[in-house]
Length: 479
Length: 125
Image (cartoon, rainbow over all chains, first blue to last red; front, top):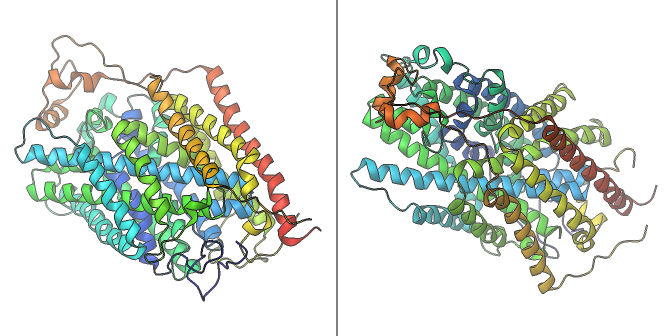
């Protein structure tokens, strides 16, 4: 590890120990945007609507905005830290340098699980969509979705295996199309162009406004995260962008702005078209709400556009998730937090190919064996633990390396207000999760406690101590 | 501080580590599902011979359901199903203790390891 230099201009990224073959620095800010928005935009196409089920449409809107504040804090904090810690592994590498090895190991697992579960959810949705299209084109009795789920994951894993530039350029194109589809649906149905078709006043009348009262608003925060979950994944590209200090903050902050717009427009058109009980049931009701909204618009062109948008959004998200989960897994392997075998880079394609291949069957196990809301919950819980780590991380970062000691590519304003806000909103979301999925939450934390003990008392012996600190920073204050 | 030289891990030991992690993670994620303790199931209400009116739907809501292909009978379970948000304060306290305890443990162990890293990287102060 000491023979690598993260800031080197002479080699591409950090090679595995003793080699000069590293990840390829070929990406620009647009790819960073495509990675972040690509992973998340599927959240507008499916999953966010569980928040409607938890508390009604208005509750989902409030959750959308509060989750928006939560993620704005995440994006600001992440942009500052990652513009300084420009390495694959993202928050894992941040934790390693700022808090310590055990926290880093846990964060690496949060990242891997959040993205792998999200990938599984995407594959489930892609399978559902194919089934819907088959039904719309006259097929009777439904189709077996499993081959399509397997095919989607295998194809995207292959793409990731072959190279990051093609992978994220593909993401850029399909994400742009999926985002445009939301804008076109909004313009076509909201009354901006032509006669509007929104029915908010009638659909949200009476008990439909807040069916569970204010506790429903709290409960909705659980799935409110789904509007934006994964935007922090932009940091995983840190070792493959040409200019991390500029591209990462730009791509991440542009990404969160895109998502705030997309989330609000999505809520507006869906809640103005679909009855809340149908919209809020993502298993027996509306699996793909934007697609269902297009179906009720009466326009065949919109149906096809949103069908394609949904498919592209799921593929872009799964694609980005494979990219991010494999980088986190790879970075841990490279540092020997996991077996060093995973820390290899493909000699030709310059990708973390072993990590990419290893995570495929895990995604398939969940895509083929668990219901959508459970898979989404697993992903959200891992994300929530990660967001709880972030405020601790940035507070310690500013304390150990005040602004004058390290030059940042971006300095987030009003510190520590965003960190405190983020921590407060995370607490609210824990309560929201507790209201419906407390068992999973406790089971998952139980898992992290067990693996933490396993890491601390067994695995950490294989990790070199000082050598894992790879950033060219001065000694932290207080140490 | 003396430089720590990590032992080289054999291939079998690496494989065992991966298997342990896989079993733990799949177990943690699937256990609540296998034990039927996962998630909050909604409970549908009972409505005899449902009509849009008896399901509390106004004309616009009923129209949208019909456009989606539902009848009052097929939509009844969807419309009447509700979550139960009642909870026990004891369970809430247990959850808070588990989360806070987890992060405290994380920070404490990490700090010990981190001091070792800094001492080796930058030398003893």
